[in-house]
Amino acid sequence: MDGVNFASQDYLSLSGHPEIKAAAREAIEDYGVHSAGSPALVGNTSVSIALERRIADFLDTEFVSLFPTGWAAGFGVIKGLVRPNDHIVIDALAHTCLQEGAQAATRNIHLFGHNDLAAARDKLTTIRAMDAHNGIMVVTEALFSMNSDTPDIAALQELAHEFDATLVVDVAHDLGAMGPGGQGHLGLQAMVGNVDLVMGSFSKTFASNGGFVAAKHRAVTEYLRFYASPNTFSNALSPIQAAIVLKAFDIVESPEGDRLRQTLMENIQLLRGHLHTAGFEIYGAPSPIVCVKMGTESIARLVSRHLYAQELVANLIEYPAVAKGHARFRLQVMANRTDADILTAVRGIATSHRHACIEQSDSAIPPSAPGGVF
Ligand SMILES: Cc1ncc(COP(=O)(O)O)c(C=O)c1O
Image (cartoon, rainbow, N blue to C red):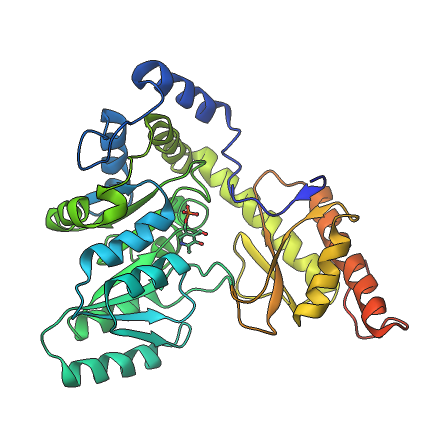
């Protein structure tokens, strides 16, 4: 596929960074290419153990378990810790790895309205009125991947503790790419070290497949080592992946990381500004996820057909990833996108949308249709 790429997840553009490539080459020399076992057996290397320590320090937690993918970490933290009689109170828009982990763990799943604290409280009150003993896990994300919005994490953590529940926050999209020192929304909300369980992915910012769960107690990570199947019964991260992520943390925490995050945010603001000027509605708050509202699937698919000719690569998101009638294009911004790339993206969407409107109405473009200025 040719065109400017706003569909890949490499928010700080680290995947081609010379130090990352050098770290991968060095790991091959030092450890070979394969971990050759699950983390519960012989799959760990000194580099993966160093990575666990590094993430624990970064998040001001004590212990970390690595997983072969972010998906496995999300599924595993829930399936590994929740028993059939326990309860899960989960944001209705939480990622599929969290929803499917919940379904695999228990039938007692209570969805609450997206980022709606009052609704989460209602669910917890109802559960505790009938069950004072079993565990409750509350599950949310720090940056929602289709809406670019964020819950009040401190309030949710307080709420969880009020009902003797455990909070899990998925930081896949913001860790490294946003917030002071790359600490994401946990950092922005002064919640680093204050959340029960943090789960994340390396695939958005840390230039590798892989994921992790961070906890305050060794008992939790030890339990995950033996009861979270994707950790116990799946091959560990390769030493190359572990070395890449370790080096990515070096960059994320350095002045270069600060500069990359600043450039990324400037790109995000420029893209959102131009899209807004062109008349489009954008979901949520500024983040590397810029979702452009299309509405019906019919118009969104028509727009999608034109994007290729406009040399723009962007993902069309529709049901079941989002509700019916809420189709959108998800543009994922990277630090190394240029102003020209951003203009191409906005022109691409605007022109495609104008063509789609003509096709759909088989007449002139409605004056209110977005895209006029571009
Ligand atoms: C919020 C969220 N959690 C977890 C994952 C899974 O991460 P990975 O793709 O690294 O397995 C994703 C990826 O799409 C995600 O968006």
